[in-house]
Amino acid sequence: MHAEAVKGHLDSILLASLEPQPLHGYAIMEAVRAGSHASFDLPTGTVYPALHRLERAGLVRSKWSTVSGRRRRTYELTDRGRRRLREERQSWKLFSRAVSNLLSGAPAGATP
Image 1 (cartoon, one colour):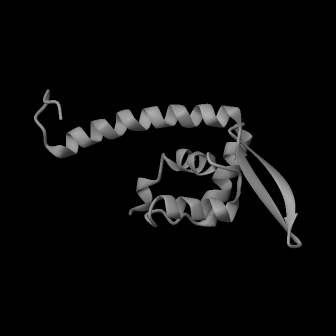
Image 2: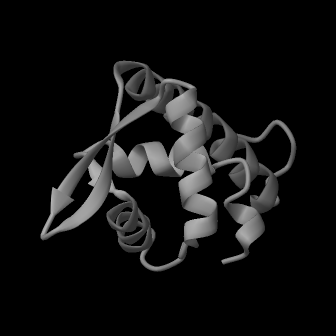
């Protein structure tokens, strides 16, 4: 899938990956890869700046821990992040329905 397909949706994708549980960066990338059936293979140079931006916006929070002698930063959704994810899901439903209508070739005014 084209990288452009993710543009504009990266934040929603990352928030959704964190919904079930807090994850560290690499686990987030794996969750996105698995959840998209390997359609999205996000590079670290895309994921970490986005996570930092989401943290500054108050949508995720992070904490450091040490696992097997290595420092690991784990991210989790905040209440604000959960609300944003709900909003993004609703917006996505409307958007995807409109695009599907247009791409299906259905005449204007017809309902699928």
